[in-house]
Image 1 (tube, rainbow, N blue to C red):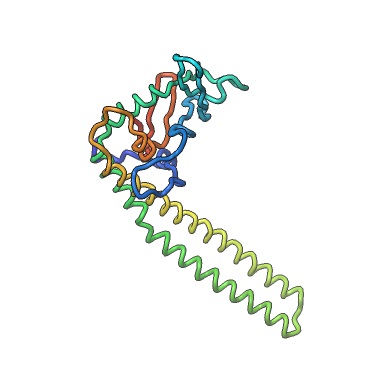
Image 2: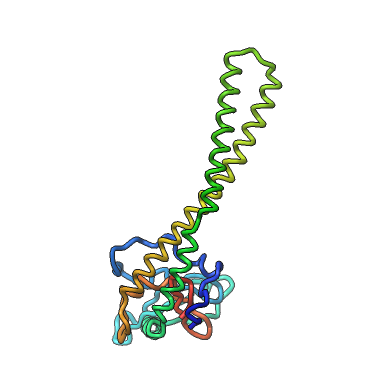
Length: 234
């Protein structure tokens, strides 16, 4: 594990966090397959699909295999069994320094919540946009009530409209960035709460904890890697 006081997430890995994570009141999962859409190929990045071998006899086995294994540019990553994934999760979970992870993730969450600079810029742009729109409306109103040179009017209109559009684009960009930061902060807050509520050690696979804490399972030629929802690997 990384030292407790050293940042464990950079921007590249942090961006992998699932912003669309469902909000839950506790650690729970409902569904037919806890591994659905969770397993990805470390070689080509494709999803792994579920296959059942020997479905009608005592040798029945559930495996997951890269969906590009036998299509187009064939992928050389091997398959993994359901039991292998479960065993790797238990192993990685028991090695996870939860207290250290909580401290590091909380520090990142605080950075995301510190948006004073962006909010000030947002307000400035909003004020500029409002002023520009008022001028535009006034120009239109004057043209409708007073005789004016239409060439001059059209030029003023285009200039103001272009300015307004450019300001709006900047405003939309910073508003989206602020919402993205807020969404990511909420994801990390839920992740922290899940870690605090989790068990100290596992002896058997826990479906609820897997769903709550795991972003994805990455399968490489060297084996299985658990990627937690804070972007770190186990």
